[in-house]
Image (cartoon, rainbow, N blue to C red):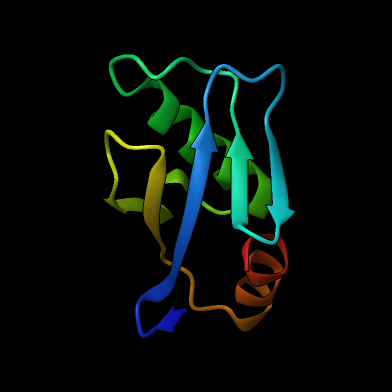
Length: 92
C-alpha cells in the first residue's frame, strides 16, 4: 500500500532459515532469514537483507508493527517511483 511517506508492507518472517530469501505465495509474502529471533537479531537481519535487496539505506526501513511477532508491518520510506515498483514486484 502506497502512502505519502513510502510503502507499507505486511509480511511474515521465518527465522533460523538456511539462507535469506523472499518467497511469494497465495498467503502473502514470507521472508526467510538466517538469524535467530533473540534480542532483535531477526529484525536487524530482516532490515539488512531488505536494504541490500532493494538498494536502499537501512534507515529507510521501519518496523511499524510486529517487533516480537512473525507477522510484521513495515514502512519502507522510498519516494522514487522506480524503487517503489521494484519493491512492489518483490513484496506485493
